[in-house]
Amino acid sequence: MSNIIILMSDEHNPFISSVYGHPSVRTPNMERLARMGTVYASAYSPSPLCMPARSAFMSGRRVHELETYSNCRIHVKGGHPSYGSVLREQGIYTAHIGKADVYDPGEALGFSEMRLNKNRKKQGDLNFRRRPLAVRQGAAARAMNFGVRADAFDGDNAVIEDALLWLDEKAPTLDVPWSMTVNILNPHFPQWNTEELWNLYEDGADGAAYPPSERNGESAGHPYARDLREHFQTEAFTEEQIRGLRRGYLGNVTYVDRQLGRLLDKLEETGLAANTNLIYVSDHGDMQGKFGMWWKCSLYEPSARVPCIAAGPDFASGAVVRTPVDLHDVQAAIFRSVGAARPEDWVGRPLQDIEADDPDRVVFAEYHGHGTRSGAYMIRKEAWKLLYYMEGPHQLFNLECDPEELVNLWDRESAKAAELEAELRRICSPEEENDKAHRFQEEQLREIETAPLPNASAD
Image (cartoon, rainbow, N blue to C red; front, top):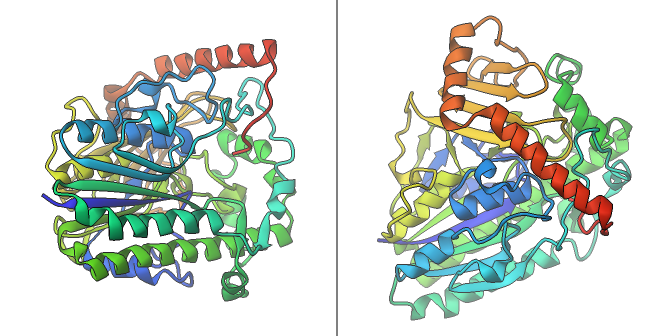
C-alpha cells in the first residue's frame, strides 16, 4: 500500500506541454515526473466542462447518470457518495484542497479534511440554453483578459502552500494510508501572468498557429464547431487577442509546472517519495484556437484530452501507456494505491493495471452543456475515435494517421463506424440520454424564467 497525491489543474490542453510534444513551452517538472514514472499518452475527460467532469471524477459515475449536464446547479441532484467518503469509511485518511465544483458543496462530500474549498455559486452558469442556442454576451470582450497582474497566482499559491504545509505537518502524524487531492485553477482562463512569466513567452505565441487548412476545413465547419464559435463570439477575436491569450496560456502552463515541481521537491525533502504516488492530471483541455474555437465544450482532442503522468512505487519509470484512459481510471488508481475496495458499479480501472497497448479498451466521453445545439458522444478505441452527434454529421477519425482530426472517415470506414457505434450503445442509448438531458434543462430554464436569478458564474 502507498499514499497518493492527485494534482489536478483546470483546463490544461496536454499538447501544450513538452511531454506531449509542444516545441517551446517550458514544463521541465512534467518531464521530470515522466522520467520518474509513466505517461498516459491518450487520457480523456469524461466531459469537456468543469462541473460535469469533476462530478464524474468525484463519484465514479457517468455524467448522464449524475445529470450534471452543464455548469448550472439548478435541480442538480446531490448525495452521491464521493471517493473521499468511501475511502474514509475504510480507514483511509482523505484530504481535499482547493476547488471542488461538483454536485454537492465540498463540505458535504465526506472527506476527512476539506481545505480552502471553493464551491460554484448556488445557481451556477445560466447561459446554457441550446434551443435556440444562447450566445454568451460579452464573451468577445473577455478575450482581452490576458497580460500582467501582480495577483495573477495568489489563489493557487495559497492552495499549494497549504498542500506543502499538510505534507510537513499532517502527513507525518498519520499511521494509516492517505490520499490528498490538490486542485489549482490554472491554466484556466483568464490568462493573467506575473511579469516574469509573461516576458518568458514574448516570442512564443504565434497568432497563426493553426494553418488555414485547419481553420477553414470540414472539421472547423461542423455545425457543433460553428455553434461554439457563435456561443463564445470567437469570430470577433482580434489578432492581438489571439496572441495575448496564447502567450498568457503558455505562462499559465509553466506556472502549473512549477507547482508540480514544488510538490515533487517536498516529497523528496520529507522522505515521503518512497511510499507516495503522485499523479498530475487536468479536468479537461482547451481548444486554444484550433478550428477557430476557444476554451472547452468540444469533443475534439485539444478540449477532450487531458495530461496524465503518474510516478511513485506503483508506476514503472520512463514508461508510456498508449491505451486510452480517462479520469475514472485516475480515481480508481487512488483506491488501488491505498489498498481500499472500490464500489463494483463505479466506472474505471486503476491506471496501474492498464496494459500499455490494449486493443480492446474503450473510453467514453459525452457533452450536453452550453454552446452546442444538442448532445454529443465520443468513443475512443485503439487509434479510432468516433464522435456521435445528435443533431449533426457523425465523425470518425484515425488518430494515428490523422492526429489533427481533419479527415472524416465515417462514410469510407463503415464497418469501423458500426463497431464503435455498437460500443457507444453498450454504454448508453444516445437518443434516450440526449432527450433526458434536454428535458432536464427545460426544467432548469422554466425555473429561471419564473424566478429570474442573477447569473452567478461566467465559466
